[in-house]
Every structure is written in structure tokens, then in C-alpha cells.
Image 1 (tube, rainbow, N blue to C red):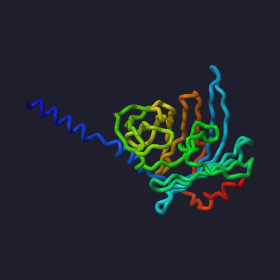
Image 2 (image 1 turned 135 degrees about the horizontal axis):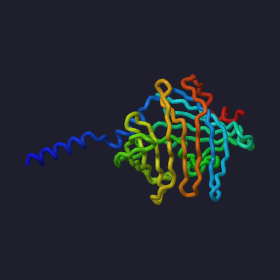
Image 3 (image 1 turned 180 degrees about the vertical axis):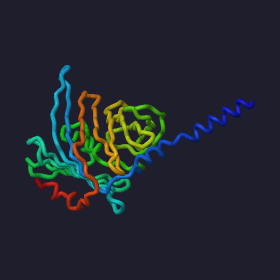
Image 4 (image 1 turned 135 degrees about the vertical axis):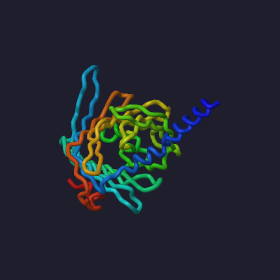
Length: 257
């Protein structure tokens, strides 16, 4: 009887020590972030033809500004600088607070036209990459239900493994599994499942660096499991808290070359 009591006590202590999936995702969401950030990126699109890799490189700048109050959580702008065929192409996102859908616009300099991305188009590929418009949009913490599936080592880091399922139907994913590094609450991997419940894409974030108070992912790799294509993003330079003005995140600025 004494052994049984001890076993029950130890089991209870173990279960109590385990955080919930929701708590893990809350810590991830609460990582200290700069008010604004500007990042220079190299993007590489990689496809397989037989056993040979085909690589295409692009360069772009990403700027983002956080908001502490009001109806926006953040605003961001992507601008391609190389090569010539995509130079000047811009992508603007307004990430709204709560369940309201984000606003997104794409500027194509060859057409001199700004195209608004409709909700039904957000599952489409962004500029031929393995990221969809939905992937580049913010996601509200309350949009999903979370379950802790266990623990696993990813990229040499001990991680919690959390399943996230959307509360409402819609979007291109039926669920996601997220690996969150235990010590610093950094996202290390995400597996995306399509509407049929099949593994669709994998996002790997193998490396982070800490600059002052802020953690930055220095590399991201999104792989499409259906067509064996992947997109790699490498950070070339990053600057924080430059007091970016609101007029940078507008349609009129989007059209500037």
C-alpha cells in the first residue's frame, strides 16, 4: 500500500509539473520583441530535377512595426531588391487584433498596380515560394486549441511538442504541430497538415541569435512535402527600434521604387 501511495504521489507531481499546450504557446507569444525591426534577407528557391538541385536567389528587405494598442497588432512590408525581374515588388500586411482577418496587398511594378489579397487567395503561393500568403499573416493565439503531445529534441534543442488545431474551419491547414524550445521558448519547427490531415509542409528554424534583449531567427527553411521544393531565408543584417513611421506601411509607400 505504501508503494502505491508513493507511486501515485510521484505520478501526480510529474503531471502537475508538465505545462499545458496553451501555456507553452503563451510563453512563445510573450517573448520580448522590438517595437520595430528591419531585416535584410537572402531568399533561395530550391527545386529538384532528378538528383540535381536548381537554385534561384533573391534579396529583399523586411520591415515590421508592433503596436501596443489600437486595432492593429503589427504592420509589415516586404520589398524585393534583386534580381531585376522582381525588383520593386512589395508586399504589405496589416495584422489586426482579435479575430478580424488581416489585410494584405501585393504591388507588382511591371503592372504599376496594387492588388489586394482576398481571403480565398491566402492559401496560394507567395511569389513562387513555399510560403503562402496565410503563412505571412499573423495568427491570433485564441484562434487555436492546443494540446501538449510530449517532448523531443529538434536541432539539438530540447523542445515541447504542441498540437494546434483551429477553432473555426477555414484556411488551408487542418492542424499544426509546433516544437518550442524549453529554455527560451523559441520556435524550432512547425509541421503543417492539409485539410485531408496529411503532412503538407515543414518549417525549420535551426538557428537563433540573441542581440541585446531580442532573439532573432537567422535562418528559416520551408519545405513543401508534395513537390519536394523548399525556400530558404538567411538573415544578412538586422536593425532594431529605428522609430519607423506609420506612413511606411501604406499603399502609397508600397508603390514607391
